[in-house]
Length: 263
Length: 237
Image (cartoon, rainbow over all chains, first blue to last red):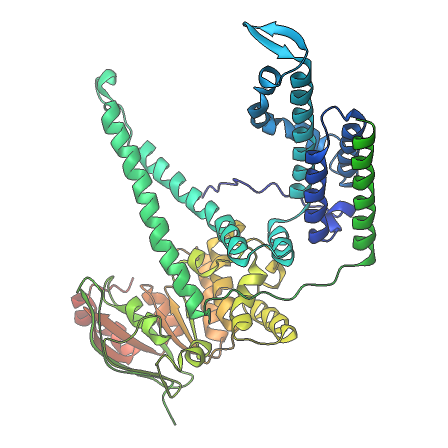
């Protein structure tokens, strides 16, 4: 049977980045994104430092220096949400595009937002590829993210694949019966009919998901679930983990400082 | 000595009014391995859901290990009866195999060291020790079925109740399952359509149809009764 791997980007490995405590990696990534976010526009030196840090981390993951770099472009279209900045921020006019004035300040802000989101995405990618998803969930739980939220992500991760497989089977069943008759122009049905088929499939999938959720809940009850998910206690952080986190925080603090002083 | 499973005149209607069980009586002695056969819709799964209190009896009584199933006894009953569902994707709901096998013991409130030890023992019992850190989604049906059994073995139950353990298995995985069912020491009630499996593993067979027990006796005798099997839509291959 075919499987769907929607979100599993984890790459097995034993590099320093892989073996780092998941809590450290989650914290480090969040802090990284936080610093990237608060940096003022045009703090190029700081941006360069952050970019350098992602390259160094990628090198440390032994997945190749440009591993995250190459994959980060997927997220760029989202940064286009900032596309209006060059036109709406008031300032010295730079040029005109289609009758709209582009300001210097606006362009600067736009490029800064692009660069900041681009390095942030790289950091997030590195965290995701060097941390197995269950470890990531565990780290979130340890970092006091509300339990129900972590449980929801956990179940989603487990059953997204199962549901995707189910929809794949439905689609295959439809394809297997989508034959062509004697007159090819009349095959395939009208738009409305096809819409009905697709709608039926979605409804079918929703019903199946609902029924499955009841069976899963029963399976949980059968094993003693009483309303609160319990997990094993956490192993302690090693000194390596602590030093890594301390070093990272120092680096980010310096980067932020440089950004504000030399902006 | 009490019987391990004692079901008396059990009746159950689903919320839509459909009568699923119409007076089931059944007793299983400690250490006995019993097969539960019958056509789809006979009430086998419904009966099994009663054995650890997922469904509450409409009328009649279910007693497990001497404990009548009530709200106060649910915790003990669920520790005593390991119920394994038919679809392993329902049974295995945690991100990793280890967490799934640890789920039962953890929710019984056992200390951590013992939880780990039990997980190890349960996975070893089904021959899946190497799979602890694997993600359930990537396993084969046969592997999932074995781990599903481990998820209740870790609770150290007296009774194993398995719903269609051999469904969807290829011949080799099925052979492995038969060996496993033979080796496990627990009292067993296993529903299945696989009558050859019944013949190989279970000395006693209970036949259900339309919410009632219609036959109950030594497997050889039940499987030799062609008229009985035919009347209830069963076939020995």
